[in-house]
Image (cartoon, rainbow, N blue to C red; front, side, top):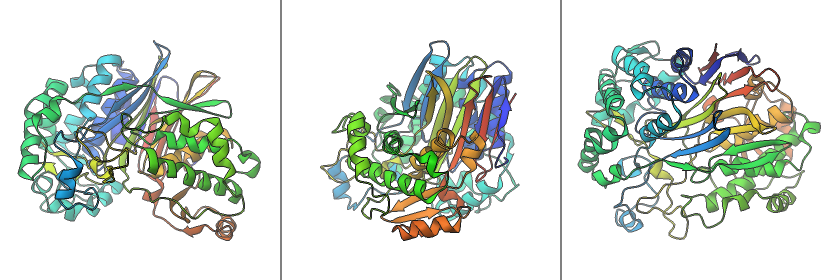
Length: 524
């Protein structure tokens, strides 16, 4: 992708991190499918060609604008902990924190049920049709992309340590190299079974039995009931205004409210006059992030266990109070650490009927838990790592409970109509980058590609903030003078964003894909 010019199309568009996946989605659109069909086809291919980030062993979330219903809908397709999981078990196991890897970091994978739920309610194509490209790539093979190969290599030792991972995701004991054709026949068989049997086969059939057997072999707690009880939930999106626009996010257990809280704080400042990438604007964004993340660390949990109404966290009165805490000339020092994890992938899709999808799916960290069910090649996610072991925290680990989630597909409305779908990979950086992109679009009048390409910050912890090298040295020096501990960062730490913008006059689609990654926007 160019760093400046957006991709334009009239009839439909898909954007993702892998050209092969984007093309699969566009092909669905060109053959009469809608945006939901295209998004799922794209996500399924991503799970094959970028397996460390996304797959059938992960979770998914979606915002979907239905042109027919003239309504925005939200789906939470995340899984829960086993019925047998408890704080007492974790303490007896000697955990000081929830394990980052291994079977006890796994929650029930929700993605497949999410796919089926979306297709059954709003799709126009059968599951077997939208999964066909992914099955073909898994069976016949695909050339491994450069960034994908680098990420795969970073996980090589972890894959060697698990029998199922080594069997399915290594080539003669090593990670595949860039340009090498990689085949995954067992994943092809798994996807074919899902295509034929749907969610029933995954959660109440042979696949569930295999995952439970794998869990038992590693001392895990899963039973068939944990899978048969799983359901996706339609939920009410949460929203906040920003300079005449409406920003929509998923409610908890996702961290979507963090972006809304940041924007609510920033709306009281004249960022446009300060200028894009200025020390003044960046300072305020960083400080707003600190305040919003303090709330995230204190309150974010399964929505059924939240101790405060989420909308209270970004209501006007509270936003004004938080805004007053920001010192324009000095950085605040105290802030809670944010959890790591950046292996996620985001998909945006739009069709000629006016449907718009903002979809995200993830294994969480690279290759998730590191546990791969050998016969099915399913990489099990490690979302359970984000549970707390603090019995007084609403996110404390427990039975059949959703953990705090970083995944947050976003959507922007203007004058009551869909304006943009946006999202990114990157764990704790997701709300930070979403806010920067939204500000670039609304405050600074950038095109969608310019808004994504513009240099970013990533606030890490306390006063430490990572700045991309493209930001002027004078800006870095001024931020340092204000008390920010400025550090560098690799491209991965700044996320990988994608978006589709709808031209309010012509209705044309403008797509943007992050030049920090290897993806693209395509339309027709």
